[in-house]
Image (cartoon, rainbow, N blue to C red; front, side):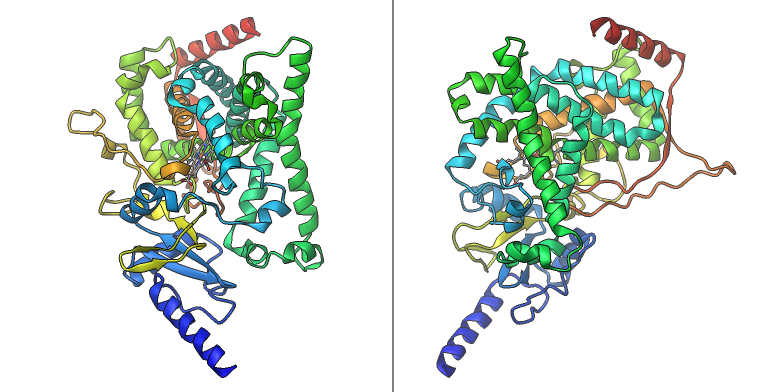
Length: 494
Ligand code: HEM
């Protein structure tokens, strides 16, 4: 018995010394008392510096998680060695809350491949260009709502991204669905924080979790499962009914149903469901929200962008995707929003398939891998003064795009975000249109003092600006007239 224990103790010590450094783990419990519950991306970046290593390790209940903190290591491991890192960790919590249907969390294998193929077909760069008119239509709705009720900008952003994806995925329009999509994803996001690691580390807990003193967890999981079912099947059922009575309009779901893959109804439900209700619209909403915040904080950036838009587009129409090549400053703003804000600060979890070695450190098969997208996009070597919002970092001395692109926020390799082109086009047209119509300011209190805007972020799979107020006003009479004409045109179309 003593020899057995000694053997395993020596193996464990060697394992600890071969894997990337991190805070000293306790037996069995690992680092559960070290793992931060707030702004973990900042803490992991500090540990990376403290241990002088691009990779760091944290352990909980025998599960090793390796966090990549540099662009170099992320590109090498998740990009060039993608075949070893395209798997996903098994997270029992996902099953408990009904999110295991999401292709973004599926293990690497045939089930994921079928869905990825369908997603790629519907969201590749050429397919996305065919959705531009739908993006413009929803941007106009958004501008009209902003004019009517500027204080509720967060709700309008959520309705914009949910309405747009509902339209693309199913050719349906229904603002009420927006809350299902955002609430469902928020519940997923809350369940994947390090604090929820207990159930992921000890799968058996999912059977007893309702008796644990975790406030109302059973009700939480039940509501999440119901939302997931609604996200996947409510709109699909409507489209199938429309197909039956001959009223279905062109949509991604319709083209999937009409293809040979349409026989796999679960795959159709998963693909349309993840576009409408997955990370897609919450992540895009988070980027637009941060963009609006950055503009309110930087009147100088607004003025330069408006001068460019006015010169190229004029004042009697909105900027459209076709203007993108002539509006490099607007594009630089969008790149800077994604860099500055880092929507998913810790990327998305991956799992190592086989043992691997990087810079002399062992990455054992089965370990969970995260990349610190926030640290990578705030690396002062690549982005001097990283906390400042400076779109000019993406321009050359002639004001043209300099070819740099923030390249961590959409991931790497085979599991890179399949919605990247759609997301970038949505962000661009929303920000450019907003700039052409509105001025954004810090709001003032009753004593006429400016109300400061906090740049703190929420914690979660997708991070958002913490709530802030700002003042959004139509720029001038020209913009009022343009908005009036857009509203009239929209009424005539409907
Ligand atoms: C600013 C907006 C967005 C950001 C920052 C974002 C970011 C990400 C990230 C980091 C991943 C994981 C990539 C990896 O593991 O390497 C991902 C995966 C994914 N994203 Fe996005 N995303 C955004 C918008 C969208 C949109 C608009 C869609 C769809 C319309 C979408 C669909 C997906 C899907 C389906 C996956 C799973 C891919 C797979 O596992 O094969 N995303 N996204």
